[in-house]
Structure formats: structure tokens, C-alpha cells
Amino acid sequence: MPSWLWPAVKLILPHVGNIVAAAKPAFTKLRNGDPAEQDRVVEQQIAELQAAASQNAMHIKELAEQLRLTVAALEKGAAETEARIRRANTYALAAALLSLAALAIAFFDLLR
Image (cartoon, rainbow, N blue to C red; front, side):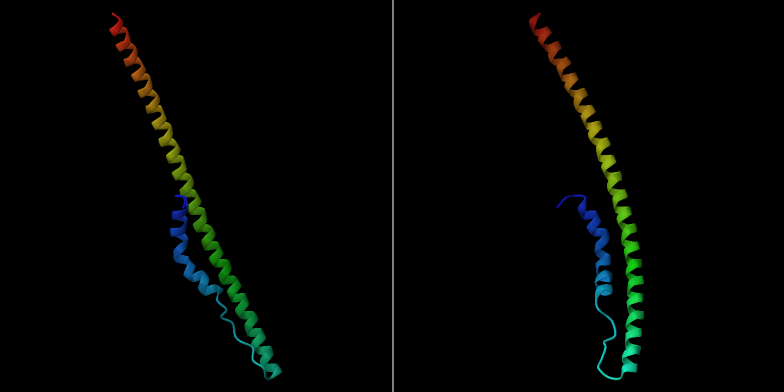
């Protein structure tokens, strides 16, 4: 698993239960019977669908905000890691140049 995926999973995991609960069909069932009763049940189902849609929209907004925060944290971590790599490369180059200078001094001292 890529290392950047684990923080995203940790942020989203607590909300999975809410998402599943919202996705479960929890609507009033239509029973065969009186047409007036069926009309009332259909209106109730429409109201339930509208409530579920608005709740889903709210959950999507929350997830989008969490995703935005996750991406921002990942970008910050990537920038910090890039700076550390640049610093390590600079140190490695300085060490290589210092070792070459020491090798040159030792070589010239050996020839004298």
C-alpha cells in the first residue's frame, strides 16, 4: 500500500458507518390497499428521498472538506520530504568533494 494512502484511509474510515447507514434503504414501504393511502405513502416516500438526498449532500461536503485537508497535508509532507532530500544531496556532494580533496592530499603526500 502506498504510504500516502494510509492517512487518507484513517481520515475517511470513521465516516464509513455514516455513509453505509445513509445508503441503506430506510423508506416507507408501499402496501397494496386504498388508493388514498398509496398517495399518502408515495408523498411520504418523496419526502424521505428529499431528506436522504440533502443528508447525502451534507455528507459529500464533509468528505470533500476532509479530502481537501488530506491533500493539503500530503502536499505539505511532499514539500518537506523534497527539502530533506535536497539537503541530503547537498551534504552528500560536500562529503564527496571533501573526500576527493583528502584523497588528492594523500596521493600528493605519498608521491613526495
